Image (cartoon, rainbow, N blue to C red; front, side, top):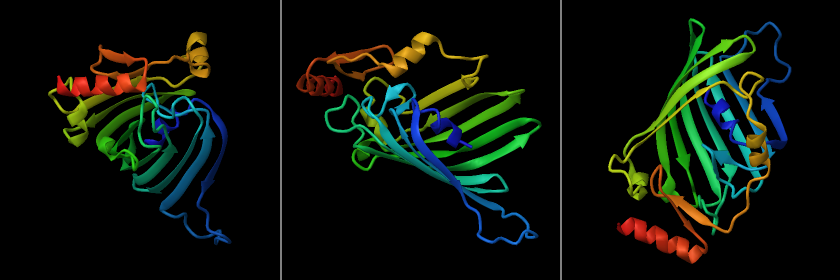
Length: 228
């Protein structure tokens, strides 16, 4: 299920607990339930999503709850504390995701499709939803995975000044961190000790970024980009 994607967003887990539903004093002869409830909670060193810091490079508290049916359908929610205020990425201090889908193993390939909603109670202009799909296949001790997330035209893209499409497609694929596909020592060092700068920044396009030395200049740059 898509929960595996979110598990990659924390740089490292400092503390956490996992739990699953289990009826007390269950009849050993009773058949297993078609419904499974699982969840997790953790304190992480920071929260990153698609390479961008969502907690201003500070620790975050995260939790998830998933209800799955034996047919392959599932629904889940995931939440995290997040950056706010004068942070370069201000998403209102909290992110709550709600998603549901269907997963099935077909000929050794696991198919997973569904819809994903991102909710920011403290910054509702950033709310959006995506359709997602992925294929995964195990090769011995590792699993290769490729997928796509597509966000159709919606209100949040009114703030995407560089694009007239008003939609977004995110593609990903590869192997998880293993001896076959390990991050370099430089990548690990960069994640553990990110460079500290005095700049505020935002993306105007995939190749153009705007940097400002003060928050006031940052706001002025945003206004200028919106008016362009």
